[in-house]
Image (cartoon, rainbow, N blue to C red; front, side):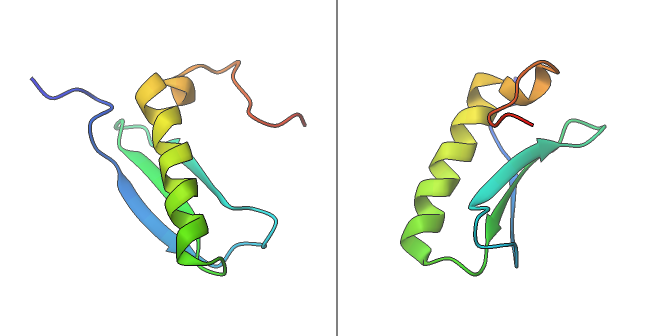
Length: 70
């Protein structure tokens, strides 16, 4: 049986440099990690691991979870 947190689609986009990356899921449950194309490869590797940990812990499915205050 495939676990819903086992895989994700990674996208690399030009984001403001203050944003290292983020993750989200769409209505069909596909997980996405978006990394910042403007940042060095090493930083994107760290950001990938960080965002993947959110997916693995299922935090994106908790509507009350926010990593940063608004």
